[in-house]
Length: 214
Ligand code: ATP
Ligand code: MG
Image 1 (cartoon, rainbow, N blue to C red):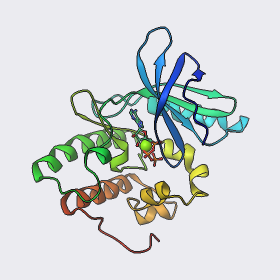
Image 2: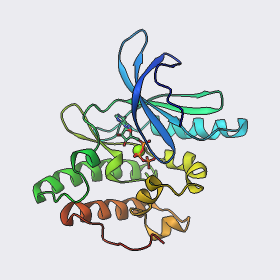
Image 3: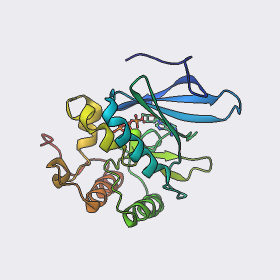
């Protein structure tokens, strides 16, 4: 992985790496003129010219999702075939960081989390948009510790780069995927399945299924 910290991309200076997942590296960026902070997601995949339009269309769709529990997508760019998304920066990390693996959460906490994530999913589902990657790593914490669901639908753009990889992050994601999603027949309810796996884990401290992923 190349660390791009220090580089300038568009109007943003990359300050430091925030983390990386199965299909992207995420940097903290500062707008060079406005001095505002943003999270810049640099996808691992290289887009062929004919795929740029599809990426632009998907970015357009998710940029129109405006909901108190969905992270805002602010901009997108393709820098030398590398697709980038600029999103709101969530200063308090992810729910995975707040609740490390194995932790049991109180029922009141679980109910509060589920209300927020479920309302974000309902909003997207009303627009026929499937998230595809509901998991604690994609639940970010905002300024007032409100939950912000991130990575809407970009799983679609990234599917090619992800499917060839077998690293821990990808395997981690698979544990939340509905059987029909693994068979390529994703539907709205696949997100509910993933949320249910997350809830199970919060209540019991372990995932509902262990053993081999498939
Ligand atoms: P996946 O590749 O399945 O999405 P992931 O969610 O762990 O897995 P990324 O979405 O690439 O991977 O994010 C990597 C890390 O960057 C996250 O775990 C989180 O710590 C951080 N991050 C991502 N988006 C933001 C954001 N908007 N604000 C602050 N931190 C973020
Ligand atoms: Mg993510």
